[in-house]
Image (cartoon, rainbow, N blue to C red):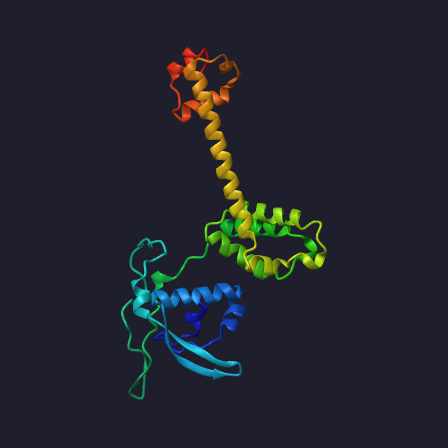
Length: 261
């Protein structure tokens, strides 16, 4: 939306540095660069040249309006309520004329492509999750709250569960509790460098190991039931339910072993 605001009506003439985009959108530098790359790859943005600036040059972009029009609509279809006064025209306009000279065409923005903002409840829930995650970080090494929130949002969008991210931060806080403060990473750097990733991967490995141990344990219990072993008396009702749910044993086998389903 920021790039569209900077563009001319035909989508051309966008020249603003990534630092400018970052400041105005309050997104992280990595997020801005990745999004620009994605837009270029998808054909939404096209590089048309470069303009000099004090730091060297700034790339000039153009939004491909045809590519935008081809995108799937994200807004819910509007319910028709009858005729309207001065309805919005979807076709191209010719613009007003002054002294016989035609004005610029009507901007190609289509009312149906306006993105509806997320609900207030969802925004509040996401903000609360981010606040909780950041609150678990060592308090004397907090820095760049906006950057941290942007990185947390990116991680969740990539499919990382907020509770896993929270556990990763808590684990780092525990691991670094005995460190001198100079050896504890500032929070913005920690999130930007994805230091949480190793902790999240470790959590996934632990879950897989726990699931494997549980599967082995259930298999052993199923053997006791199949053999009608005296050890069956140690099998609890919840374990019987798990065995039936996993289809390792049948109701008949449970009853033959002297257990209740």
